[in-house]
Image 1 (cartoon, helix red, strand yellow):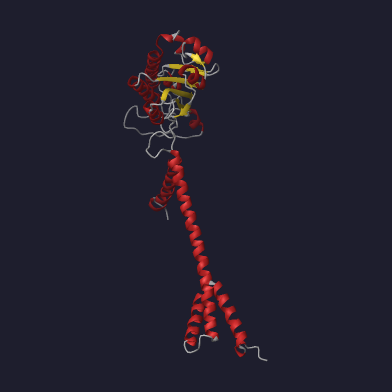
Image 2 (cartoon, helix red, strand yellow):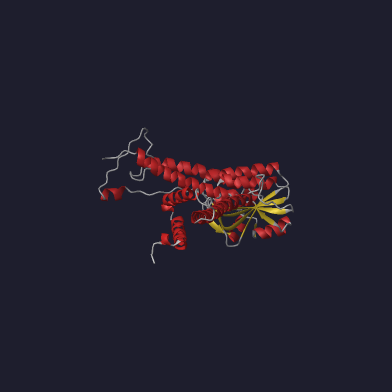
Length: 363
């Protein structure tokens, strides 16, 4: 008996089905599959529906339908994942801030507004003037906030940023005389941190808190001897006599040093004036407290730098009479943080692209 499948109709049908199955599983052989179908259609056009050609066509169509359904299911699956991801981002955004743009999740019951001042007080930091002032305005605008507590844990920072916050506290207090502001120093409230505290109606600290440092500092390094030992020549060009003011790679100039001291002294006097206006007669020894020293909470109480010892919970419960506290600290929403990081990444890649395409090259 011949082994040729075309000699036996049943073997021929099985062979055709195997070929179709194999070809349908290999996307690279699609042209062969199409040619096979065309050939079968032409042959079947002159035969009856029960012929082997029609059975072959039915198997091809069935196989193609299965592959198409699988492809459609995977497409739906990946589209669903995309929509879930987008809706998750939207949910994070809405949870991070109120739809109206007002205070996030403000409780309708009477409470004490807490505003955290953590770390260095400087532009771009968490405790920048923009962030702290934004929180202060929301707290003063809330009718349910019985009082405001500035919870300070800061070693200081920019006198400009601290001055902005101090001025805004005084302005808002004048507009809302019935709402008191308390400053509570936790670990440290020194320099710029204390600059903010003196704008409050009362200041409280822990017995071991560090308070004070009412002074101004500016420091740097001198590398003149080092570059001489390394044989480095310093070259600097300016259009003004003092443009290279306090250059760390040039010998120290006595006139420049004296001038810089006058700038620091002026800033120090501004600091002293703010403290005197904020504390008034409560300061017991003006000369000693303005030397830049840092005091413990107990010592600060004796000097009149603080009004008492206690935590923010103590102030809310015992002084304000409202135990409920709500955090009004301004923080970027998760959505804003995502876009900030995305913007940094885009800027980085754009910088690399421009440097590669526009920077001069030696070839």
